[in-house]
Length: 173
Ligand SMILES: Cc1cc2nc3c(=O)[nH]c(=O)nc-3n(C[C@H](O)[C@H](O)[C@H](O)COP(=O)(O)O)c2cc1C
Image (cartoon, rainbow, N blue to C red; front, top):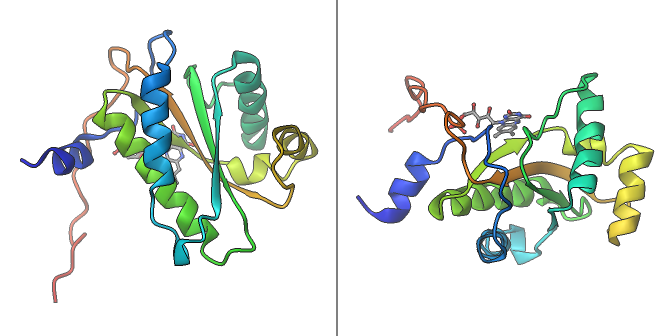
């Protein structure tokens, strides 16, 4: 099977990671793939924030958990977290951001890095603490969170097999 098609089919969400950090080379390759996602009218509405500093990851994790009213780690201890946000003044922002998320996860899988889409970025960056982080990172406070892409090398039992695809997923006319 074609390597790209195989990677697209075999990527699974990973929720258990080895403690070792994602290498610079792997991270750069994943980020670059993210930036080559298609965007509406090529306006490139999204930005990707790459975090490997454990303190910042812990802070964003806490804010994300708070949205759920939980005190667990929604990032499953991943050593790297990528946050995709987008400029909502560009009409296609959400679609653009979601496509970046897809590229990040598929690129990660293609080079042996585990990933998972973690929700609630929108709510996190609507909070005063989230807005303070945006200011610190030099991102306009109007930007909206699309998703968090957690990354790390998969640990034993970190992924589950794909569930069967829903019946009538494809409607051929
Ligand atoms: C928009 C979106 C939000 C998601 N949010 C979460 C999340 O907050 N936590 C989580 O553990 N997985 C999350 N996932 C991962 C899904 O649960 C996962 O993709 C789905 O169960 C299918 O599994 P697979 O990715 O291994 O094929 C999310 C996926 C998407 C696309």
